[in-house]
Length: 491
Ligand SMILES: [Zn+2]
Image 1 (cartoon, rainbow, N blue to C red):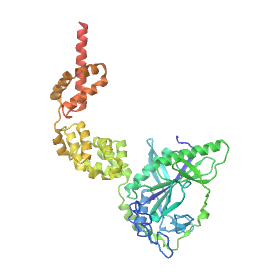
Image 2 (image 1 turned 90 degrees about the horizontal axis):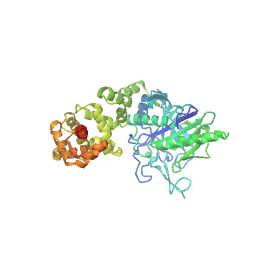
Image 3 (image 1 turned 60 degrees about the vertical axis):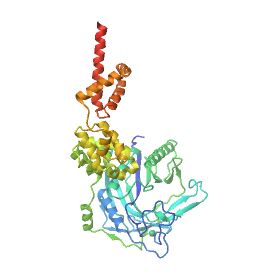
Image 4 (image 1 turned 90 degrees about the vertical axis):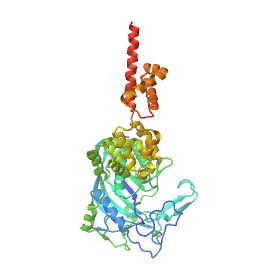
């Protein structure tokens, strides 16, 4: 689906502050995953009568850092509201959140984030950000909400700090939405807010409308691929209704993850239904100019800055720089390697992105520096730069380094040190061509078959030749053969 000017998409993104040690209003651990059900709870997050919430100051600090990075207007006084609704995963029957108006304020409003689509810079406006508590989790005995015999409730997640980020409806295609979410996630990782590898750490409500139609909200979509599918489904559904002359109703729909469709629900809460009012148990938090100044001074490097640095300081291409920066750990690793070698930055980036990352694997990326210490890779790259080893050996060595071998011992044990080239290589090429007459005949008729001979040369040199140089030498020899044959035919 391309960008359609009549499509408007806005997002409400819920991100768990997974980097916090405790929940938003109590001292229960925020590491609730894989715990036995209802063991990570206390009277506060169970909403027992008489229990009193206390705000986690670190959560405020983290939210303020996000507000600064998103160029937002930050409130001087942050206050808390109760949002009422009845649902089994919400033991108090209200959620502590924030709100703009009625005497309460959210953390910050009116910011923006720039992102790239097809090489163009786009800007999405951020309406507001606020903190709120996560509800518990409803666990279906079997299947889904519709098919399960009964439901169970696990309150381990209840009270986990959520950061809600609300955008203006500034997107017109799934491609824009995904590019924005990638950028936002990278930013939040650099700010040490969340680890998006954890299941359920980000959930998105997607608001979609077509020109002339009402806004439809698709609730709680968990993964980027589901967000894309939900938008495509909903735009198609609304378009076909419009074509039939049926008015699109304003409603909330659920995303059915298994069937990949949106399903209408009977609930149509309006803001009045939630009866927002200030939480009397929680005093407001005042944000002093000093506090903001301290936070601004201690902001970590943001993705855009790092991306620029990799291009300007290390000569990495725009593309490879984006790939490295998309994983904070990877960009840090790259810089650690570059501190220890004089190899060209773009070449090092290419080897890390195209070879090392594949062997380490996405799920182990956080330990890349433990799996292959930067000093070990730097040593390998330095040997490549000095011409002591070939790129072929670098590519062979990387999986061995990933499996725990160390550069020097590996190269020595495999006999990989010492490049074979020039006259020495030409002699080996001659021998290989003599010993593989059939392959030579093939290669004379079909240039693609030359690679087979290159392989034989690499074998004969124990991979210590440069495959490009070997290819050129073989091609030259084959041309000489052809010329000789032609001479004989002419006679
Ligand atoms: Zn608790």
